[in-house]
Amino acid sequence: MYRLAAEDGDTSPYRHESARVGFVVGRSVGNAVRRHEVTRRLRHLMWERLDVFDPGDRVVVRANPAASGRSSADLGTDLDRALTRLGLALTVSP
Image 1 (cartoon, helix red, strand yellow):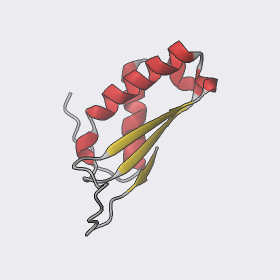
Image 2 (spheres, rainbow, N blue to C red):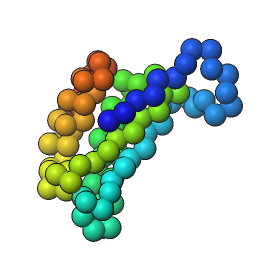
Image 3 (cartoon, one colour):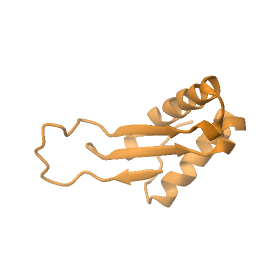
Image 4 (cartoon, rainbow, N blue to C red):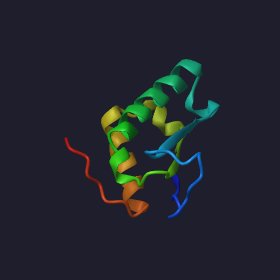
């Protein structure tokens, strides 16, 4: 996971109200069906965690090949671990 923090005072018309998240799920994860499944699960999990980012932040989540065989709960744990490494406080409610 990579994060580009928004700069204070940024008046760019491209600055959004909330953080923007992109996903990189390569062919090594599996065929197109599997890649889209992993992307949908990651999108849902990141939606629950958007409040830890500042408005205007840009985030990229890269799925490793192991993501294909992981459950949503395991992917959520992996995302929480990555957010902790970025130094972001988790406020996800169960």
